[in-house]
Image 1: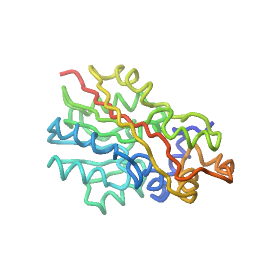
Image 2 (image 1 turned 180 degrees about the horizontal axis):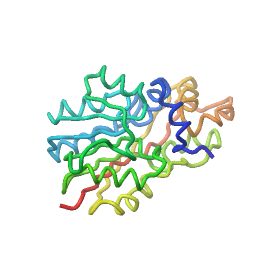
Image 3 (image 1 turned 180 degrees about the vertical axis):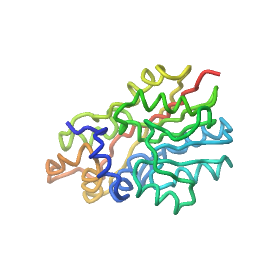
Image 4 (image 1 turned 60 degrees about the vertical axis):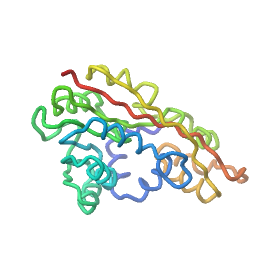
Length: 240
């Protein structure tokens, strides 16, 4: 089974943005009923943070969105130098950093955002402890992830099985409660419509977990193909 937290795999996957942007259509692309980032940003706006840290910032689109809609000061970090380069081009104050060893003082931020990245962290408890450390008392972590059965119809087609993610909708709350005083969950469910075979094949081959099984994709597909999407936003609050 593919390990989503394998450092070598993660480094290779995020050395450039091509496969990442192709995967993103599973929660925010053309044909997606609801962009799962909308309730994430809505929850951040409601918290009215003044200073935000984004970990695993990718190419910087979400960071720019948060700054635009909240007016907060935001620092973006990522392990990938290429992602940091792209985030800087998008206007973010972006830096290379590991969520397991954040280079910030205790209580530095009102909010931390971790969007679809925690399943890549080798030592999740260490990562959560670092996030809690840099949050002020009463600060909030906003963490998005998928259900273990996100896009299950595609997984069934190629025989890859459930997601190998170790931080999912189903188990995320229990993990977060080891480090945070209260955890709420906002579910964002819908469908992703793949209009043609090229779209199906492209997504499967861009997927970290499904791509090893891409050659199992049947010759005949019923199109358009509808796959259920399941994303969740965890809102985890540090004790005041």
